[in-house]
Figure 1 (cartoon, rainbow, N blue to C red):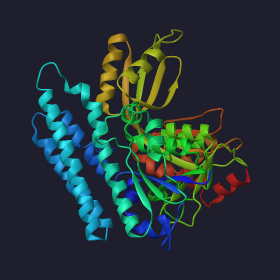
Figure 2: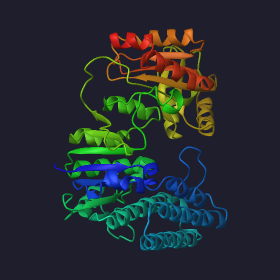
Figure 3: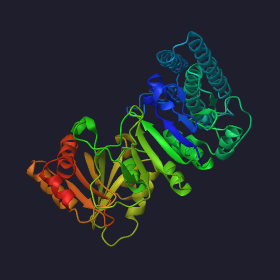
Figure 4: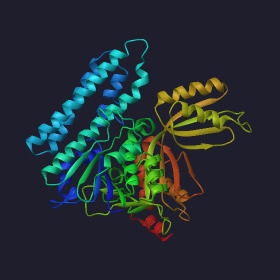
Length: 473
């Protein structure tokens, strides 16, 4: 166990040239013993699939819903232009730029021809496009990572590094391999002590990464690679540190780097959209005994934050974060004492692919705080009204703020948080804390989310008197 497996996210990849002399080399000397897993350049996967936050249609979404050919063809051409612009921004040598551009053109036109052929095939009644949509999504996803891996390899080879692009995307590969077989086969014969593998974040495999993990596939590849090769440590390089809150909300001078936390807190962060690592990837690393480190790629001398299974040395609040949610509330006067309501609501939410963030209930009301579109929730509402015609269902746009820590016992985070918000004149619509003492959840009006996070961060982590009480406790 002499090597590390390290992942670079898309935003950091777009600044690849800035990392050449720090992350990959030490003043020009190659830093071997490291395997890098790369994401597509920033924004490319959004163009290939759909925008992760806004939902704006990319190539995949336009192809899946196409009334004609023009939309997805134009989207694919725009993606090709964006990919070329991305590597032109980080490559210095004209020969490298030319090779990368030829690669983009070959892959993009290959994908275009594949989609045209599939459209033609599905014009016959015996074939349905819907049966092939997942494979299309997989095909398009692999284009971005294959491109970024090649570009990184070209840049490093030009700098004197013995780098090798390891393409797991299965382009024109007729074999049907499991993820484990794909990774181990590609890594066979590679010695990280003598060369630097640059591995695609997407891996084509029999299981279908997109089916199980969708946009979290690159972290799954990363974690499996670390576990299968017996890595000493798994490292994720981001463009920021894991901090006690969003520095854009509370101020860069106010937040504190976490430094150390555990997988339990990382799971709670992922549940609230502040993802340090995909929960499935965290599970793989945890079970393999591979510690995880999250660093700021642009501060190479900073050790970052270690995530492992170690308990906290003392109770402390580590992070305050929040998420916009919709409260899906079902009230039925006759619910009390009757079994089945919970199961029926959960089944409807699951069937319509609604992500549940939290839940509360009492004698006749069940409320799920969910991260979903109103369109999806209207479908859930229609199903449940048909099953429970006497029920009253209400949807409210709210926000859920969470105070997190490996051990919150004895800190009074619920009572002191409510007191701090009350003194600041901020209304609380709901609050809860479980007996495991890892998080306290507070429900507030959506417009109050930024101010609530600032208030709670100042109370528990800032430098004021409340923070002093927390540390003392």
